[in-house]
Image (cartoon, rainbow, N blue to C red):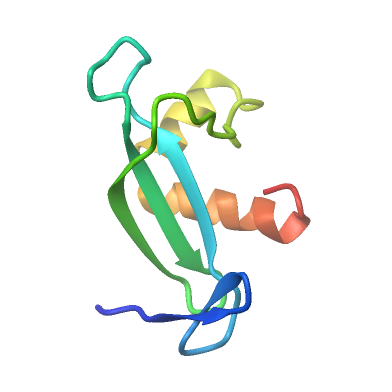
Length: 99
């Protein structure tokens, strides 16, 4: 399925429903890995319930906010095993204003 977004000032919105697009990037590899700069990038529309995920380059020196840091390890691992569950969680956080 193709998903289009369009610019709206400094942000992007869903071309279908006009909902602002949410995005999150996280590191998959530990700092000592040569793959540390290869990260997971997610973007989604909470209105249409559509998302996309890609490998993205994030420079080693750039610090990424870990929105899962406060979770117990078991819950964090469960979310990271399922993109759908992860995005549902992140979308709830964004709607509450903490993401």
